[in-house]
Length: 407
Image (cartoon, rainbow, N blue to C red; front, side, top):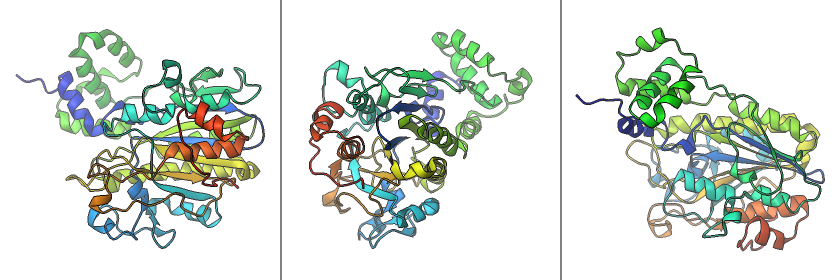
């Protein structure tokens, strides 16, 4: 008799929760660092590949309506070409105040394999191609710290359940885990028990970990009659980030930025929208909006010296798929916010959406390396040289001309 809970079947079905642990909402680390001066930088990693064409809808492009017949009805006008997703309505006052901007059609140099794990490594390492091991496994915010004076173990530290590559490296840092309790519903625990039982390598350690979650045996027995599909749906609901995740993280970061901290990075998950994107992207956008507005409120006067950069590992396909979602793509969008920003505008060019303009016949073509925008922002915020950005922070980058992001 076929075991519906075999490890292989479990892993195959778990694609319904997002196609890899790299997109998991359970991983929400924060990194913090001190730096000289009064300018602040916050980098938000959007794990799971945000669809930039849904966040920032190019309704002025005649091909857009044909590509996105179901996903992008209407929006909030920003100019005569782009409209903003309706879930971001509370961001409009920032746009009108010049404290919000976007970079459409941008990406890291990572191409073609479209793996969350690889894409996020490239995004956080800020590197491309084959580099020395010591460089390839450091993060670009850590390499920025090596250029700043008086950095010690107290000036850079990570907060969260796992360390973020973006702040890993030779510059000293300390890690703090504010809470490591993993709360699982009975249905989630039962599914994992079946997974562990099917793999002896997982069994002992896995069951010990599950015992620590405290689900009652009677609760588990009551779930035995559920089929695996319905239980996977319940587990997906169990793993969905709560609405308060974004503002809770941002409130903590804002508190640190009011003190000695000048650089912070944290991640928000939930962007892997293979199915029913119209429904699944909305709470992710609301969490991002809540995080930015909480930063603004929490920073008070320091918001005027703050720049927020929200970026993702890659974009998504231009065409909808058969389940009213989108698949892994290439070109995406970058969101910028803050009182130090020259906002109320779009930065960069637009490649067009015709078939001839697509990357690999399926994706939005990036017009400029996302690292160039991050590099110029750091150069202007922290008084670095362009050569520092191109040689140390992002080795091998041709930063080009300044986009003039910062006031």
